Image (tube, rainbow, N blue to C red; front, side):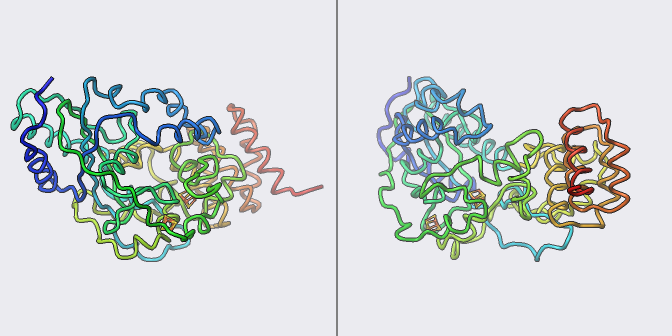
Amino acid sequence: MSEPDRPPSLTDRLKAEARRLGFDLVGVAPAVVPPGYGRFVEWLEQGREAGMGYLRRQAEARGNPRHVLEGARSVVVVGMIYGRPDPSPLGPTQGRVARYARGGDYHEILWRRLETLLAWLQAEHPGVVGRAVCDTAPLLERDFARMAGLGWIGKNTCLIDRKAGSFTVLGSLLVDVELACDSPHQANHCGTCTRCLEACPTDAFDGPYRLDARKCISYWTIEHKGPIPDGPAEGLGDWAFGCDICQDVCPWNRKAPPGREPALEPRPEWANPDLIGWLSSEPLAFARSLKGTALSRSKRAGLLRNAALILGNRRVREAVPVLIDRLGDADPVVRGASAWALGRIGSEEASEALREARDDPDPAAREAIGRAIGVIDGPR
Ligand code: SF4
Ligand code: SF4
């Protein structure tokens, strides 16, 4: 175990180093049981985590940061602004990607930067043991961010800083040395505002601070593997990956400065991707192009599934040929979503292709094809 932090100026120098490394927000919290843990457990008990089984499996670990780092005494929490203005309006075959995923993968970027910060701390204070975390370990990061004074948790469940807003990504450095802690952010500046709750297109909020992942577009487009049921599929809107609506409407984001980290700079091909382009891409090349981006979490199958569903909802006739091609895709999730979309768009060509594909070897894809044929044929 390292010596406690005396004099406390080590904490100040650590924070200065964190800012030099490009972090916009930095604070320190004690490595204790997070106060929001009870709410998290309640949320799980209500089944609001949807298919994110890992949250349930790791629930106990989230109750104490010492499960993440044995002997942890302090949690240095950092934030980086990623918000940038929206690109031009969407074209008829384009989809929308959540802002945080339009540039390089923030997990990798923050994690590496935190490792550098740890190396700096170890040089300054030999013997310190630490662990960098950026969504890579069971830690209630938002809760620690609030404890470290970085902001409050808004009714949309995002961490909000009065100046930086909520378009910030968070990371943490757990260390076994006692650093000078910041005061927790006690105030809540949401006031009587309810914009986020009202703007959610899928009514995913059961009330303030109560997000039901089973209704959230971000959950379905990113976390859910496999076919998306009709209800959520019809509610995707333009979102090919994630959803920003409940943050876009937040008044605290209106004057927030844009992100300044070059590695998070949006890439034009990811900001408003052409969905027909996604569906037409050569599979290996497409999968390779996801490397180093947060989009890789959905993998090719998830992204193409989302693309097909959006085009189907919009009834884009121009997409029929590529959707017919995708009925022969190696991935049954892509085949099922393509069938779903063809069923909604219709046309003789679509109907014929669906009939040819109706003996699909995968039961879920076969069912989707059968239902799509039924939609085209209509009630008898
Ligand atoms: S991310 Fe979108 S779908 Fe999810 S709660 Fe926010 S507005 Fe609703
Ligand atoms: S939109 Fe309003 S209620 Fe929602 S998080 Fe922002 S300030 Fe809070």
